[in-house]
Image (cartoon, rainbow, N blue to C red; front, side, top):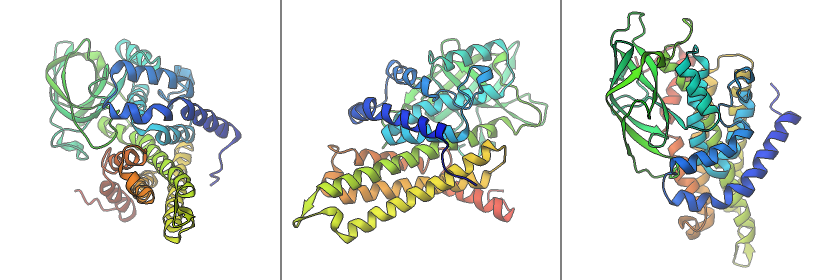
Length: 386
């Protein structure tokens, strides 16, 4: 399998990298310290990212989407993770919602939401996790009960990226009256039309990203807002998970690359005992380990993206890339702080932000340990969670 980027892919990488270097990197630290971006500020950034294909990157051109490949999607999200991971997570959340909507059958309400999200007039998100249901989708308690031509939603979602600022939310629900053997569904909830409460969750990293709890109390949603999928598709809630790891893993790799470049730059400039830090063998060892981890992570990741582009199922390869990249990001950002010494512990330099952000990727959208269980299940044929 060829992992070299094509000329078109290299041009895409170069254009987004230059834009982020000039427009995003200089403001990332300051804006991240101010906690979650407001809806207005988030939309302002997302609007500028539309031309690069960040919004609904996998939506086909025939549906007015960018029509990017999985490899191209990985390239752009890696570069955004390198510039500002929190902004990458904001873009990814809207993109997840769009990808799901694009896979569903069209009805007027769904088409309206898609047009709004695609034109960056609205922000989107996907609400799956609950206080007692994370990876275990069978434990979902949020219900949707039909009443006339509407559904009534009751329940709580938590750890929802973009939760406080999103206009359109895809909510995974338990369909109380489902008679098709699949008790779960996904409802599109437009906040302006179907109100729900939100509270922000303070967190260690990805400060610029809104992460919230969503409370649905007799939230009435039009019946046409239930996403309909082909009969041969996976259960609706499970359709979400493979797409989230595509951007998540790329963002983690971007953080790793940012940490490596920052560490190398500092080690060359910082002089101790009459020599640059880069001359010391222990520093060289850490830099070498960071570089090896980054290259290995990219190979695992872009292998899985190539397989997806070729129409191949690759749950094991996706889980391998996710598990490895999330741990590599934690290890690399920790080494970067060590190379910076005391300055690395200060928010005067971005490596402390890199470190805080990296830890999010080892626990969000399926922890590193859950990814490892998925890998073992694919190899042994035995599910450890049953």
